[in-house]
Image (cartoon, rainbow, N blue to C red; front, top):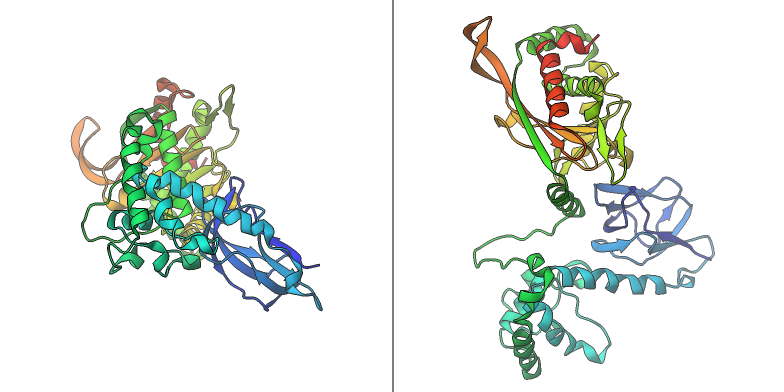
Length: 436
């Protein structure tokens, strides 16, 4: 009996994913450990390895398919002498429409949603098939009275996309669908006033030359989590200026001594360490809020914001309060490189007790960062720059940066947040203290 290859859960939060790319084809022999596919989860694009040995019998889910539920059979693996036809694909056939329909309804405008079935069901009714088209393509087809069933799709699995409608004949639809268009539009008109989901309606795209890129699962997750954070977490922001001269001097001295080992510390490496030590000094900020508990962590694991092609991701430096600066630097370089290549393992970007985001390299003076739930705080680092500064009661010039802490006010009082900011400032301005 052929072995069913199922959509794996590649992260703790994964419920569905996009089968981004097949790395094998039907008839290929694989053994345990061979890479079979690239799967886009809610966090990153990850490679899926074979567990068993055999021959790829049938590929049941085409690459580029979105919203494939965890546990769905995506392919079969046959052993010597077995037929690929022995595995029933029935479980897969039910999954694809389920994944497609809710997405269309969630993103399509009200009027387009009401008229959508009319142009779709005309020609395919004879074969029992349903025309596959993106929500945008359906809306444009409805507006321009274009018969979708007469088009050939260039998207994944033959799906009709916006580009397929360019140059298509307007007014090609039959009179029956056209009549079905106007009536639902009128009937749907009052709905927005009394309907809660009005705010979720898809925005009308202006008639301006543009390119449209499909949202990746990572980008959707970022949007959802940041929206939830701003809506559900009461943020309090505390900003102070920090003199950097002593830290910059220590960094230069340490880099000279580490040169033979091929280690070069960045300013961010020292700031990660400073935040971790500060959290141990002010444990009331190293916390997580739950509906009925306040969790206080006994070590500081720092999530570090890294910009990747798919969106922002936060690899975690565990035990940052006790790790050496050279270990933090080496680990951070490796994590950041693999984050940009979308090669991080789930355990390398989940967890963390607090976060740090540094935009100083872009010349940003200061900013308010959004808390990464369920963490209780995030430190936003601005650019270090020469500023007038009072030194020993006299006006002088110093290297200064602004740092802003965003705190979950449900879990962290303003006085505790201020204590953490003061501890962080003290360690950065007297950096030997973080090495003791």
